[in-house]
Amino acid sequence: MTNYTKWMIGLVVLMLLITAAVIYTIQSQFFKPEQLTIHEVATKIETLYGGTVESFEQKEDFFHMILERGNASYDLQIDATTGSVMKMNEVAAETIEDTPSIKTKEEIRTLLNSQNKGTIHSIAFQQGEAPQYIVEITENELLKSVTVNAKTGEILSEKVKQQAPESNNTPTITKDKAKQIALSQLNGAIQYVAYETSSDGGYYLVEIRTLNKAVTFQIHAISGNILSVKNRSLDDDEDDDDEED
Image (cartoon, rainbow, N blue to C red; front, side, top):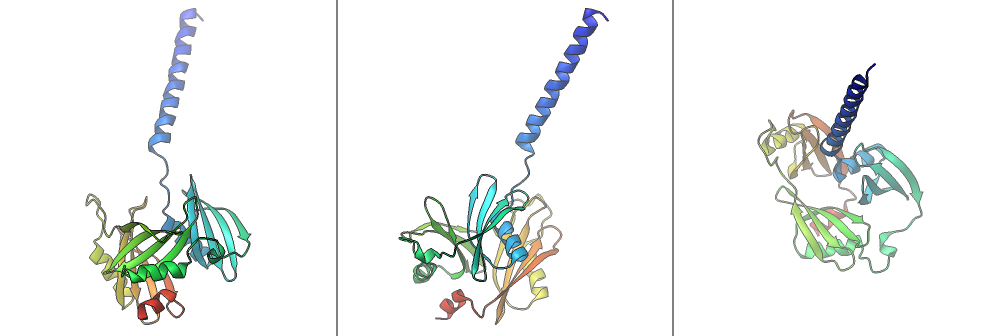
């Protein structure tokens, strides 16, 4: 084998290695798996284990959630991409009300009710250097997410959740069609319609309220199929009591 042949073989091998490195870099930068939303993960955890997700925090590629079930609380670490539970530990019984300088959920509820923000749907405590509450409020078929400073009660942000896809480039069903699908399953009053993006085309969340329960339908935004149904009893719903008062 001549030196020229050896040199050509070495050059070809080097070019193949460079090509492989470039392809790997492109895939790493542009084809990363899409992370799940907090709502998707919280719904999955509540469905899988029962109970209620009371607080959450995202750290890099993981969600950290506190799940209350019965008289126990559990600390969960969840992969934000796959939704897999990596760790689950029972934590010592400790309520937010016992934490100095942190307002209670009841205080936050009273504060928002005094400002006529709408009907409070849920209140979740979010830990961190600046502790805050994430409050979901329904009003005129809108689902709003309100962030409140847990120490001062100051409203930090208020955002209406998307009701329909921002772009019509995909053959998604309309918000009204999603409402019709939900109402075909249950007669009642529409509380809100919200749209969530996902890697498989997105979905609508439609909540219908009857005399004694609230039912949330998760409807695929392209096929119109019902992906999940979540029931919540209103018998012990403190938020509904506040509304009646």
